Image (tube, rainbow, N blue to C red; front, side, top):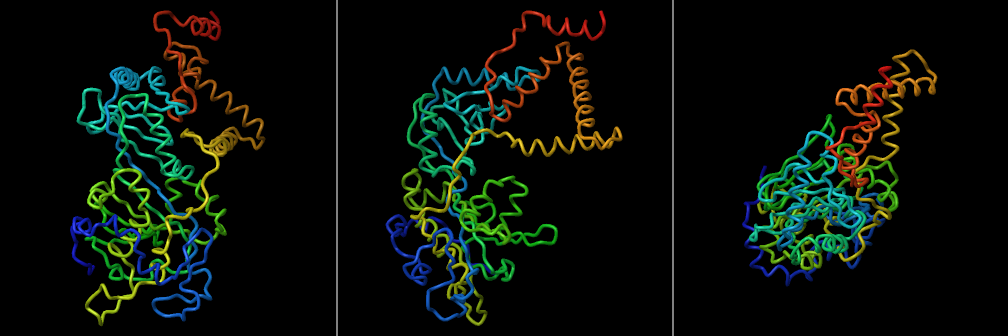
Length: 448
């Protein structure tokens, strides 16, 4: 596809980017003093006649933003892990590698968070702990040149707390573990969720005028799903159908937030998202948490007016930078990041457990399947039958390893406690004494 030549991000740093953040983008000028807020219908400058650069204001469904904010945040904390915490994590990692019930004890508690200690880690970080809010990788105590911790903040937690609030909570959790300094931002993703009457497949790839080297479009089951610009580079953009993505990611928690902002639960919700890696932020002199958070407007302005633009191609003009800006892009670029980007989740728990409703639906399917197997449509009969069958399966497994059925069931629950971050399995089993209860139980069921 025709695209402008890739330009080094270093040139943008030469423009003193942080000093230019107060400059309004051309889009903001074209839309006057209005700033987009959740629930607004943005169709262009009020009173302006319809044209190829300004949408018809009578079409109130042209652009409807629901939420915007930070979707992904990766933080690197300089410092040194204490020797005692290093030793504890090593012991827990060894437990996590156990193939038996000891793996369930591989948990690390920080504040109100119960983290799973992973049996493996990656790169130069030997320890990884995780719950729904944070994935934390720790360097070893002796690795003084490495950051103490590298943390991924989850998108669901960022739907509950602002980035600054999330970082403050995280720093409080990490502070007792060693010497800790203020974090650097290793990656940040900015997004806008919106609806529009515009067909997102209605333009060709040449309509994207960008400094990136590649533009790709995607479809699933013959349905267009979105665009990807700059794949694999330090700065990427995605414009995609968020509802289709939710079916894979399971992020249904976004739908009530969209409805709160005015979504009718029918129209497709699209997401425009930009991913900034550390190399970009460094070249723009933005790497500390405060500098990045204070300059979200500048980052958004840069990527939507300089790095990437959606245009209306004018093939008679060979200078693509002069092509008119698409009205949808003007509306997207006008988002004001100094305003509240829509509702946040009022309640949040850092567990990764599925909902009771999710489990109940699958339990119902299993009960119905058992009813079909035994030839009954009576719920209670099928429920009793599958309960008995499940107990027999539990009993068989327990007998094979020489423990009681209640010990076996406790171990299964504890394994899920670790996986779901729902409870702390504190008591280690006593491996020096026989399990008399299991011996007595087996004698009873075997009639001895």
